[in-house]
Image 1 (cartoon, protein in one colour):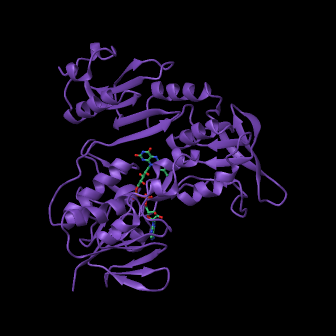
Image 2: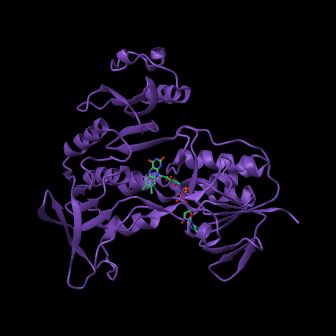
Image 3: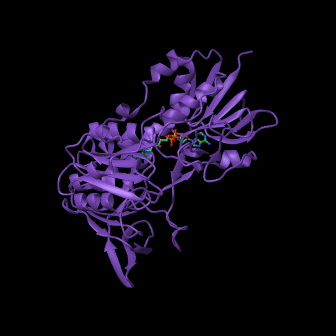
Length: 414
Ligand code: FAD
């Protein structure tokens, strides 16, 4: 009988892996199980062109449905996996059936972190949203109309992208952030203020360093009417027609932990995407892997990571040993501007910037001991590519000329 690889999670990583196995010549059975009704799709447009109405549903699909048939990938949508039985190498599916595997890959992604506020647990609110799936966008679309007041809780990339779309659609937007600056977890203060200015100029209002204390509900407890916050000890209520919560992602690790696999902010895997069970791998947003850059462990949430992790897993499943070694990178689109980030800036001792916050081009370089750890680049794609190479090379650079935008980055290698 054919060997069977079962992939749980038909998202970016799962979809890439299924196709990658066929491209590498895997001849056994490939079963791709997903609990959403859609074939694997790109999530980035959810908070960009899809919400704006400029991308159609089928534009999001990674591959047309016919491709799965052509690749002989058994794609089973609307199929939720409830448990893994490692002793029999079987999965328990939500419909009560069981499915056996020879190799299992968990590509379960994550879910939007929920707002935890007293009294909220019992309420089902029609105008409180998060952004993770096509269904989330479809649920909120009718509220994205000019004049509506949107309160966004959380100033990360996804929240900021939604703010940009909302402004373009004519909504009035207030963004609440607990930290004293935007994107505090992922970038330096220079980029935070660039992004803040970008949004302020287009009318987004901010409440930074503010604590959300509660939601004001209507009598039927179906609608949020406002968000109660406190800033500098001063209480305020911000009226809302809709509220969007963007406070991060919780990795879907329950299948792994239920099966006794190690979980520590993600399913623990090695550099080949393997868990401690030789028959089980984990990839993408749900996996926590060793980082060749920091020497520690890391869980990444990005498309490039999902693609690279799927490539590593395909190699492992084909009997090759190709460790994950890619430098993390990410992008975000706001108001037609492309923000690109590469590397990990943690521990930098110097930040050099180019361009101006007022202009549409801006770069921030994070260095340690004159070596480029990371860069945030706005509107300069060629410079981003050069920064990517510099981060990967770990070469020492001439920092004195780095602030001059006219000097090509590549020429700075000492
Ligand atoms: P996912 O794509 O989340 O797929 C996991 C799938 O598994 C889901 O369909 C889930 O429902 C399913 N699943 C979970 N549990 C089960 C189960 N028990 N049984 C069956 N199925 C299950 N990244 C970038 O690089 N750039 C961007 O600009 C960017 N923008 C983004 C904007 C938004 C709004 C969002 C939500 C994400 C964005 N990302 C971006 C992140 C990127 O989309 C993710 O990192 C990527 O989708 C991760 O892929 P994944 O396959 O690991 O997880």
